[in-house]
Length: 61
Image 1 (cartoon, rainbow, N blue to C red):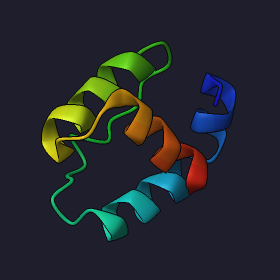
Image 2 (cartoon, rainbow, N blue to C red):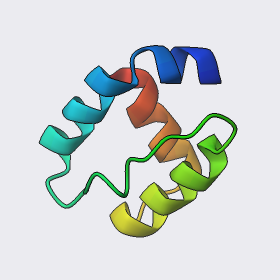
Image 3 (cartoon, rainbow, N blue to C red):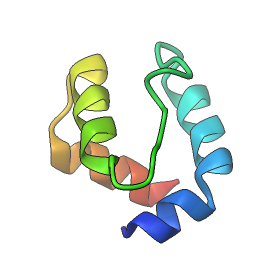
Image 4 (tube, rainbow, N blue to C red):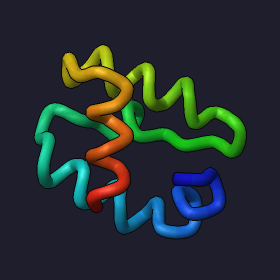
């Protein structure tokens, strides 16, 4: 998944992530151009998943 795809659908994807993982907050899902890796690390810590698992989730929504 590239940054453009992530940014383009981010509002919709963010809503789906919040539905799937109620523990996520707006702060956890802040996406700034060029900071994708930082956001993925936050999600890893918050959800206790691997980077690969996070990427699969992001690709599936």
